[in-house]
Length: 434
Image (cartoon, rainbow, N blue to C red; front, top):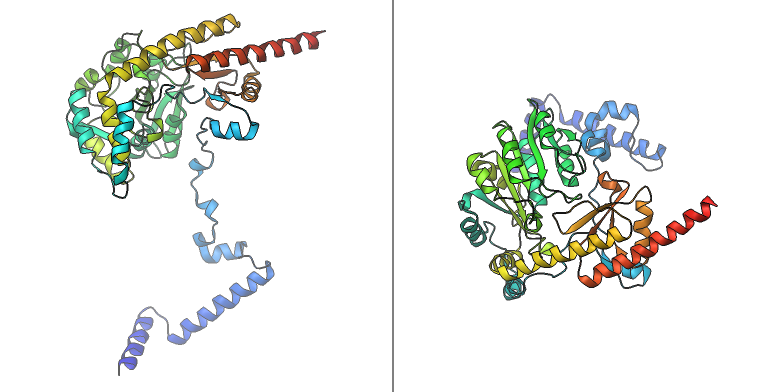
């Protein structure tokens, strides 16, 4: 009885669909017979003929064809070459001055805090980052609801575009700035608007003039990576006043602690007056926690709530949260890092000038140096001498390199190696002229 009832229901369902059982079985046989025949003709591969496409419609597309056009030409972020890879390939001791890392490392307090919670790694971390948001709120003069703890600042850059941009809208940033800004805008399907720099710096007036009705997001970095330049607090306040309320200004302050000479005031003061501002900070630079991948944003609670819906669950580890909490309390380490960087940056720039180069004035922990059309080759030569720097062709500066400020020993090795490379190339030039 049960089997008969099932067969009757099946038959009734198929009749409702306009098919009999025999019709269905016939269609299935025809489909699989055709599929097997097509595979035999194509050497075992699935058919991709026009006839098959007409029959199957979108199902006949390859995975590659399903990728949106605006993602096809999207560049991949190019990280600095790992020091382990260089030492393994060239069998030499190398120094890495390519990724703007803190040469003094993390705070001892941060390392101790991380070790204490490492044994809890079998547990998921606090997805709401309660304690870190509480401490940051107290430090920055905002509420915990105005704070979003993230996977470095990179996640924040991406989420801002994912929330506010789509095809038909526009995002603005500067030429020669942090590559993930442009990538985030393009990945959303929106139009990327690039404004030329002025003296290797953001041209805020030109960016304000570039705003149009479809504009929704503007990305700024202060100080800027890779040029190391910074705009003043008054320049920024004037710019924000010119931006419509319906346009979000994303201000990346990854290197803000190193900018000691431009009189920058706390951008939270601007945020308190204009809520269309998202301020990004990271623990990767002055706090020395680049490998932990943790940062945070200050912004309007409604915007952060929308970003929270799109973030990766448990985006920051318990170890990273503990290290960040402790790092905030080690003010002596932070001050030591700032002072050491300022002294070594000055010495590095003086050494570069003695080699006949003209580094751009830096407000960061790296130096941007125009070196001419042989920039990539100079970077390769330095690599073989055990010094990893960053040629910047992929960031729009084909005739420049970027050198991170290292320890005194690392900077000395860099200057010595660069002197050898430039002397060798000058000799080749003289021979070629003769």
